[in-house]
Image (cartoon, rainbow, N blue to C red; front, side, top):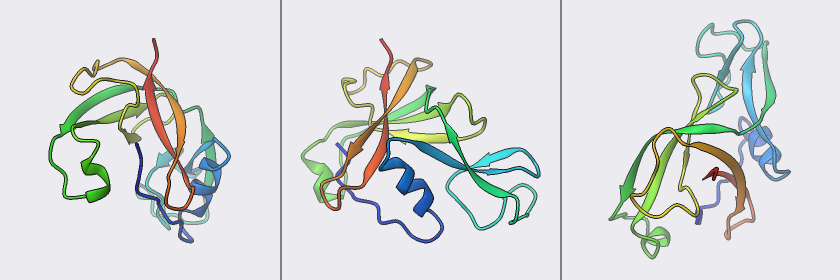
Length: 137
């Protein structure tokens, strides 16, 4: 489903590069032991810059909430309407939420609290892989 192709910049190139290798990495501040996403030049909690590293996480999580998009102004997504947009709580990165279309889950049939696993889908525009999540049966 992802049709929009992200273009990496200097700040997030490590994130997108890892995605292309089927890995999910997030910025982590070793000074205050906190993950943050999206990436920033400094830690949002303690304002340090020299303690930020990239740490791999499993991508496992649970569905926190969701909505259904019935009408989007984004022309490349209009043919897929309606579609789910879910908020995923990551299991091993407390406080980090990611968004997903939940491939394989029927529209408006999203089980809040269900376990999910990460997959990667390739975008058509530039071949960039993006993380998505699927409900674990």
